[in-house]
Image 1 (cartoon, helix red, strand yellow):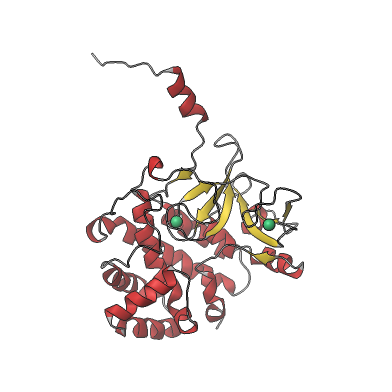
Image 2 (cartoon, rainbow, N blue to C red):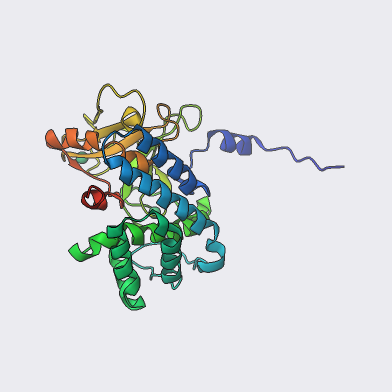
Length: 308
Ligand SMILES: [Zn+2]
Ligand SMILES: [Zn+2]
């Protein structure tokens, strides 16, 4: 006979009311992102749709690399640090170059002639040069000449760091006051999502642009300067579907900064990386009003190239 153990009142309360500080990336994250990019590309009328389509393919390839990561990515070194994956204290792992090659092999049929040339230069670099480039991109110290390689290199780094973040337990990532940078890897949040009511009751989670972790941050509190008064949500009116429908900018009149937020109640499949690139009209509107953007999107750098 099965042994039945009753849960204590505390255990039941914890499972019902527990608000996690940190949420690990989902193993199908890149696949969902790929679908989302595809949907946003369909809704896009300008040539920007070509870039969204490319990123849909790239995300699909990332999903494949993540599925194969067990065999190539080294195990996480565990220590007492709260930031186990910190980009300022972790070296580029040896698996980087083989994974970069695999990314090329699996994406080459989708590349334009211009991108193919970029790739050939990237693949011809000696390994130490590739790793030095990856480290600059990882630490957001990109030189002008690095820009053209950035999305491909970052795509590989995302897979490695997401794979590592998936191995962490909630207890590995304790809550802390500083909420702008990712508590796992120290990268910038690309934006935030407001979870659906019923799930975590309208809680806001910032989303890491590298390891795809999510961490809880109070709503109506500026994630740059900590201001809690007069935070305003602004959105582009009239959108009934797509990224602009769920997107708003949380603007702060103290520091004139804003960060984008995506409502999962309005757009249940919103992805902070994809929807950010599908809602650039919001950035333009807020830029015209004098606000400056916070939240780095590693895929935003290719805008000019994609429009050639
Ligand atoms: Zn992170
Ligand atoms: Zn502020």
